[in-house]
Length: 187
View (spheres, rainbow, N blue to C red):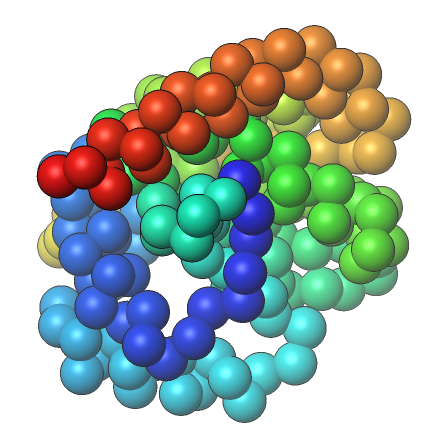
């Protein structure tokens, strides 16, 4: 697995990914079409301290997205994390993203907001050592419906402990992703 910076030509993939059934209603409203996503990306490329990545297999197949933004006082928000449901890339991609944040980017605390109905990601947040700080009621409108968001923080020490426990799962997932990638090349 690897993270690479998003490019303009990723707009179609991002629209497709954010509109998959498992993502709709659990992430912020997305650009409805490639032209709208391209316009969003144009503005994104002008912003400083906003990192948006495509999660790829070792062979370069795009399987998801991940982002770090809103850097302030040695903290950053983590999110835009969406992965194809048929690819077990969640844990390896989170390790890459969080290692980048706490390592090269020098972040001392990660902030995360997760829609309260996004049970798989809420579970992963806790496995990653994140601490729930509060629930923000009716904090966002997604698909015309008001949703609650659960706020989490993650400190480097908690991440280091959780990371060690996640490494065996990440290795298994990477093997499975490799098998998925081989199957894709045959079809």
